[in-house]
Length: 155
Ligand code: MG
Image 1 (tube, rainbow, N blue to C red):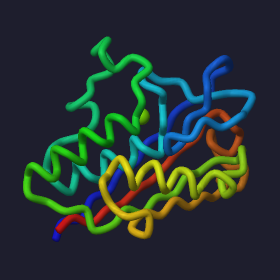
Image 2 (image 1 turned 120 degrees about the vertical axis):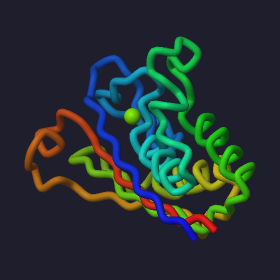
Image 3 (image 1 turned 30 degrees about the vertical axis):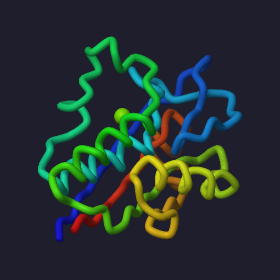
């Protein structure tokens, strides 16, 4: 069994689409980044890569590579999951937390879970997406950005 942890944070930027767990959410600002800036999926990929000893997303998908500009992070997760299977690992479960003051995540969580499960090649019952606010504290609390944490277990 191998356990992995992932963390990511992105700034909000006007004129960008907000994509979380592969779900496009109507919001005044999106997250800034080289890819679609899906902070949740980035944290999940880093948890998986950490557990399997494959490095991190910066190593696999450098933000200097034009091929990943605007890339779908769920698409990248699919690649990560394939690499992990190739190494002989099976994903047991994924748990995650989005930290954001807004928007409200719960209405979108089931769609995120299903996108992540499909990309990771596991059942929706093995994926969890939770959300909390930062109690208006710090950069996330003043709505400058959004963070996410993830853990996974591999067998
Ligand atoms: Mg990121």
